[in-house]
Length: 280
Ligand SMILES: O=C[C@H](O)[C@@H](O)CC(=O)C(=O)O
Ligand SMILES: [Zn+2]
Image (cartoon, rainbow, N blue to C red; front, side, top):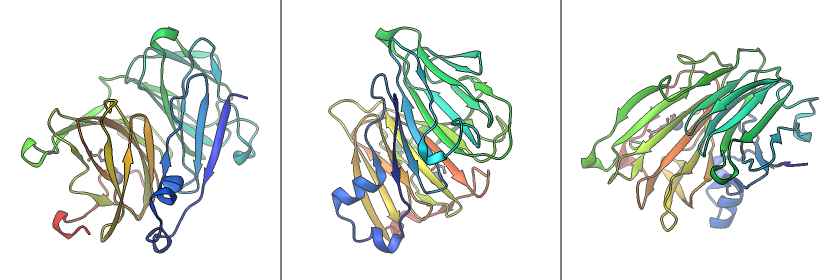
């Protein structure tokens, strides 16, 4: 078995208020991503969202079903989004091979039985970041290259939040049941993502931070807007954002992150913004 998973339960904001640092990290931080030769998954009870990684080197890795699904195969009732943050790799879906270069993505629809991850070269291995959500309709698989994404420029150097946001898996790019995924890159000298912060009680979200230099970190803010908490994050770590929580971070350097979300609607811009000077 090379597919491992752990379960995270959903929590009330009233309870999370009293969590100390280690409890907060135990419940929301995912720190075992991109482990070589493994598929590591976290099954969150927020919208039954699975976040994880597949990091094959010499041997291909097959996505096995996990007991939490009680399904014959992983995608029996799920859809899957993949973004490769490493070297060139392949994802073979029921016999069809898709090549994903660095920062290319693949949407795999519900009903595909066989998903196999491989690297082209073990010395420059692929690193596949995975998000999966329940799905009740089979949409076609689709590769999303770096030219297929929708690009938005956000923020400004004056407010230290100049960044480029790329929408990979949104319903204007690919047909999906509920999954949305994209990537945001901070410009050199800017540190704040998602500021002004927002909540969307209709959707949960997961942020996966990468391209964080080794001796640097990102301070991720979560919690209700008037009751915030922080989690210090390193490279290749993800954090679960409950629907009632803000999700924003500031790095000690520039960095990149993948956001993924699921829930009630597919309206990317449906966010309730928080006034910066009202955050507590
Ligand atoms: O609901 C949307 C998500 O929080 C992100 O897309 C926001 C983000 O990447 C950014 O502003 O930097
Ligand atoms: Zn959001």
